[in-house]
Amino acid sequence: MKVNLFFLRLLCVIFIMVAICSCNSTKKPKIQKELAIKELVKAKIVPIYNNYKKGYFKEIHYLFINKTDQLQQTSGDFYNVKYDTSSINVIVSFFEEYFGFKNVIVALLSKPYPSAITYKNLPVEITSTKHGTFHRAQLPIEMNLPTYDRILYVRPLGIDNKYDILEKIRNDAVTVKIGNETYGFINPEWGYNFEIN
Image (cartoon, rainbow, N blue to C red):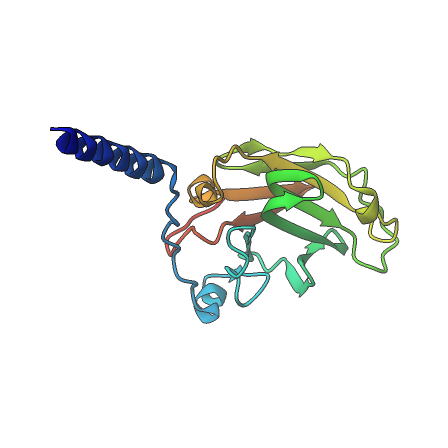
């Protein structure tokens, strides 16, 4: 009788441990395979890097929609896009950590070097289709270089574990309005069928 009671308790402990472990485990979600660069170019979509999903899950770079041929070139981590009679550098990305911010979509604007135009006072509006309006944030001292005249906008996301980000950004598009110009970005998990205004 004591042996049966011992095995019953042991079985209960094992069952409880398995249940606890399975509740706390986070499964890595399925990531859509990268689209071929030729397919993206044909659809007028430009990734910042050829291997644009390489940073998952710490950073996820949104892809630039170049439907009206606004892109001049990619420059480091930025898309250099036409603005008025000049240009401006723009990047939209999710970062697990970004200069003190955690789990945030970042939109960083920067003037190309050299440029005499100042961008700090331009009317800027940045909106995510899933997460709403971005707010302007204070740049860390190490990023606040006068030669680049950078402006930082952020949209924090509530994420319980690092794999939740894919569901948070799936089917998300970000619109960056600077003055009279509008630039569109989609996340890399958008898939083959997309439409943005």
